[in-house]
Length: 165
Image (cartoon, rainbow, N blue to C red; front, side, top):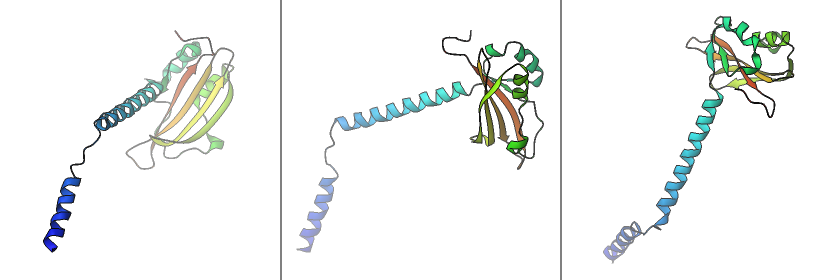
């Protein structure tokens, strides 16, 4: 009797493993995976495009200020020496913001927080009659604990209806 019970359990398990699966299930799963992968690729490409900045040196600031509203994404990589601390909001200043204020731009928004490549990002949006500029001051983490590479970047947005050439 015991052998019959064991044989029945064994047979049930063996047969249960061969349950047919709907033929369209693997295709649906495959399509969902492909859709998810495509969406992730589009999001990554969008992030990449939004975060692509041409790296320039500080001596480019004068050229930038001549025609600021036709500027694409630019990141100044040598405005600051390597820093060992992050300024408090009260003492935080941005070179590009000061330069744009002298050109008649007004601050319309600001914020700060952490970001994926470092402990701090300070973002300021400025506006004049012709364009809107978003300036970020980025504190990059380095291999040295407590040392930060600091850059500033700018991206210009034209008013609705206008485009950059």
